[in-house]
Length: 80
Image 1 (cartoon, rainbow, N blue to C red):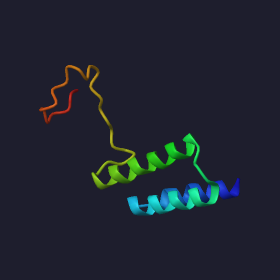
Image 2: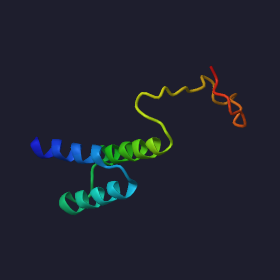
Image 3: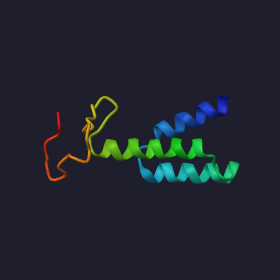
Image 4: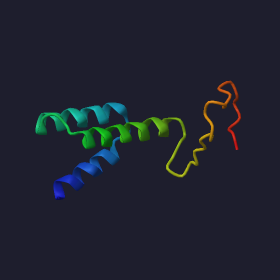
């Protein structure tokens, strides 16, 4: 269990896609092909890194239009 927590902390400390990629390569070297849950964890951290670069944080509210088919993709205004 301790090793898993150490790995989670290392993921949380990744601040660039390169660091995340290096960590993923290390895990594949150590454990072989990663299961789906591990790949999903890596992708969630990739999104966190990309979001942070765009100014999105965990406290940034995200609004999703209730009817995306009707949403105007040219609009710069978020639907309410």
